[in-house]
Image (tube, rainbow, N blue to C red; front, side):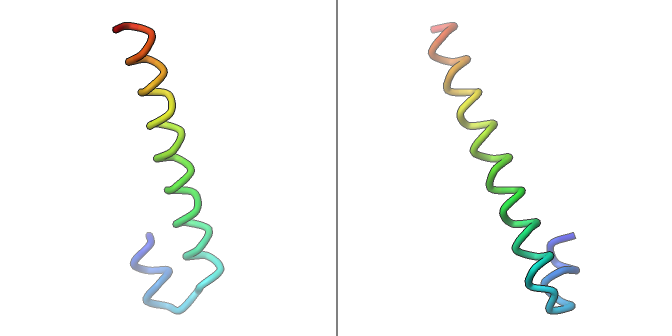
Length: 40
């Protein structure tokens, strides 16, 4: 999906996809750190 957005020069849609992926990574990282701290 990201490749298609970038290849068609749809910057707004590509930036939305990149931002959504970044937020997802940050959410998983934060929750994994919280779980690791709680169980360790």
